[in-house]
Image (cartoon, rainbow, N blue to C red):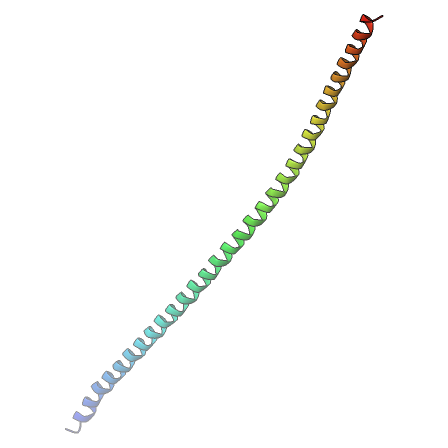
Length: 115
């Protein structure tokens, strides 16, 4: 019977050690799960911030692009107006010349009829 004591304590010690190892493994698994969840949340928040930043940057680029296009279009339209104005002035000068010639011819014809 004296030998029965150490034999019965050995399985209990092994069982306690196994139980301790299981608890440690469970604790490590829980810690790893918590770490994964924290990392996932961090990465999701970072992705959300990056998406917002990207949207803001895209908005800014589009705004600047439209501004550049408007400026270019403004210059083109002002140049077109200047050309049209010059063309109109030339046409009016030409018509004025025709009117003056016609008036001169009418005056000359009238003078020729009355010698």
